[in-house]
Length: 92
Image (cartoon, rainbow, N blue to C red; front, side, top):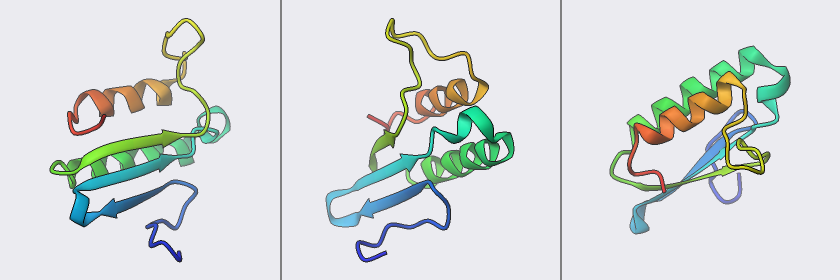
């Protein structure tokens, strides 16, 4: 809270308005064991990205969503994250 990260969950975002930047942190550990929290997080991600299209966006993820060969993990939430990224070109 002392650096104004906005969240009431284990995922978060931080806007740097004067630099036109948006940082998003996802709790990818949820994708393995909590489908209700994972679905809630994906819905939140889509809303954040949709409402901040003018901000260059960087997403931080704790656990990789791809295997060592570069293939997306066979997890529906990993696929949904990549779908969200693909639909939002402001994400780098």
